[in-house]
Amino acid sequence: MRYVIIGAGVAGFAAIESIRSIDKTGEVVMVSDDPHGFYSRPGLAYYLTGEIDSKALYSRSKDDYRHLNFSFLNARVKRILRAEKKLELDGKPALAYDKLLIAVGAQAIPLNIAGAKLQGVMKLDHLTDANDILAFTKRGRTAVVVGGGITALELTEGLLARGMNVHYLLRGDRYWSNVLDARESQAVEARLQEEGVTLHHHVELAEIIGKNNRVAGIRLTDGHTIKCDLVAYAVGIAPRIELANECGINCERGILADEHLQTNDENIFAAGDVAQVYDPLTGHSVIDSLWNPAREQGGVAGWNMAGRRAAYLKSAPFNVTRLAGLTTTIIGSVGRGRDEDVMGIARGDSETWRELPEALVAQGGFDVNHIRLLIGDKRLIGAVLMGDQKLSFPLQKMIANGADISPIRDSLMQPNAPVADLIADFWMKWRENIAA
Amino acid sequence: MSFLNIFKSDSTRRTVLSSGHVVPESSRCVQCGICSYNCPIGIDVRAHVWRNESVNHSECLTCGECVARCPRGVLRFAQTDLFERRES
Image (cartoon, rainbow over all chains, first blue to last red; front, top):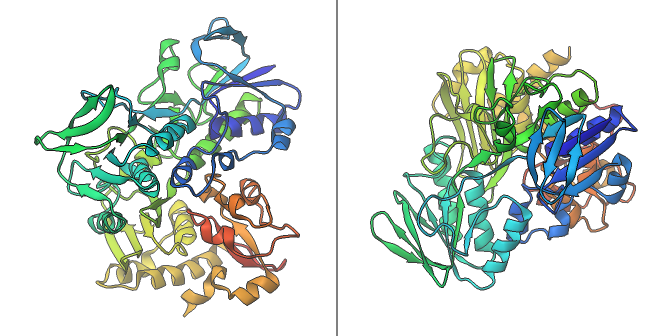
């Protein structure tokens, strides 16, 4: 038996762990066009700021690799030959598979404007990109960041930490408008400005101006120009579905996978950012561009590949991130519609966050310690926590388990309600009841 | 206030040093490695988090570097008490 995993992200790695927990002898091969293998892609943000070095991004030790007994092949897969159960590789002999996992992730949607190919136009998909950005920060002084979501802020903060003057361009009137509310966006923007970022609202990039094939500045649609040495963009990501599409595997926005992470080919599975996974609870197939779901999906895919039938049950999506220095947790459905700064989905994003049914909002806290709850008829639908994270775990559990909050619903809805205390008290009682 | 009593991360430093250890909430972790990178005695904190195990390393000083530096609030102190019910 030969298991082949295309992609070196957390979904692929988790799949190998699962396979090895069942099949100790089958051959396992990971193939990736990323020469650096498995490392923490979310960690690139902290590599950019200088909080860690590049070695720290590699989360598994040599012992772990030895224990898992798999080989890594640095190659680009050109085609999947389903009839022959083979992969055609760029510059290397074809590789046969018995079970195949496609976990190739997603990539930054490129800028579609004049000058987008100039040297100094940067994205943040891989370690190679982060290294390119760092090399550029050594010779440049001014950067322009365009886009939205978490990655745009990570770029902004990374460039700032490296001593650059940063201009952040926003198409709308505030940051991440379809997930954060006005007050949350304001908190983030105020902190960015305190750190020295120049924010530009209601602007759109028209063109990147080049000189000797390098970035020299940008021009906005209103005609204004900004001189800069680097343009970093994060305008959304696109699941890398081309390989699957070309060989007739069913795709929509991502590769369609059932709750067993199986595609319409019984020998081919998909997991992570590239997969659009069926959720039996809602009947929808959704994409989560999040680390933990990717790990869980990869794990479940691995079990199924090795013959243990297992289903992936999507829990309330949540992500923890740092927005302008504020630890922020986003749980369940919290926003609506689309963000003008992002096309499709952003990295560290979930489509579920914007599936907001009719819900009322209760707020508490102030400035950097902030809680926002999305309250349905009887249960909590979503929550945003900024700053203090003590209530993050209780809210995650209550939202995931659909806790009936009727006893405190009215109190939560009162103006200036002590939201944190109400939730904390309710959590204590609810937890006791669940345990009983 | 019950709110202040619920969460073990509010334990005093003295209590933690005498009877505490670091516990993870693994689902928040993205394996960035800031915890391991900053551990003064080189414990691979992140490996414990991957396995969803508390940092039950005999050399852990419970100095709190990993807890304080984690950008995603993955780590907290909990009292070491085998008979205490855990949240995770």
